[in-house]
Image (spheres, rainbow, N blue to C red):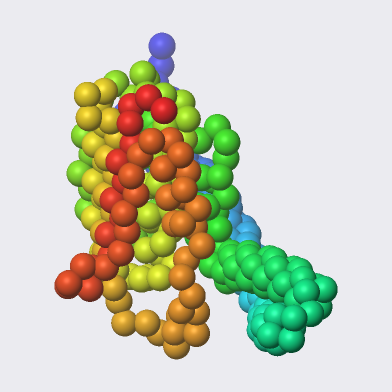
Length: 290
């Protein structure tokens, strides 16, 4: 074969072709990479827009809930307070009338006045209970995080297990609560179902009370459970200086008295209150079998 070109021309042509191929491949890679980056940036922008939309919706919903809570406090709670006050006044007048009728020897009037006093006492007690329930609903509207914990714990299927206990603690920490825990539980699968439900509510109620009445305070949670000793739950927290929004609500919590009654009916003990260092304690002991 006769070479039509010399070797240098062949080498130069090969180098040029190789450079052109590399340039084409580089440009194609850069184009593909830029398209991928554009898709990633578009996805991030869409995600950010969705998050902003969710936050705006949450803010609007919370503002609406605050407005409803304020309206309920100004109307419903005020009306129930007046009802309880008027019932107390009527009860006092009926008792006064009864005493005067007894002094005059009028048994019929005294009997009727006694019945009126008893009825007004029932009205006053029912109005006070309705007022506490109204305050609970208003608190749920103003504090949706507490409402979620409370509603989750009110589930009839909720019972004290390792998973449910860790879930409660995790939810509380996700809501910016500072919790120190001491957990020593054994054989929870053998725990009486009714006792497990009550114990779960004890832990939930203790954490909810801290969030409601001492927001920002550190919490100490101790849970011990084993067949010989039963279930022991202790929640403690120092009180925090109340902000103006919390100083307006100084009523006693309605959750602990009802919970204490359930604990006593199950054969357990429930003690709560402040010590000499102004630290609030909730101490509950439950038997292993109800």
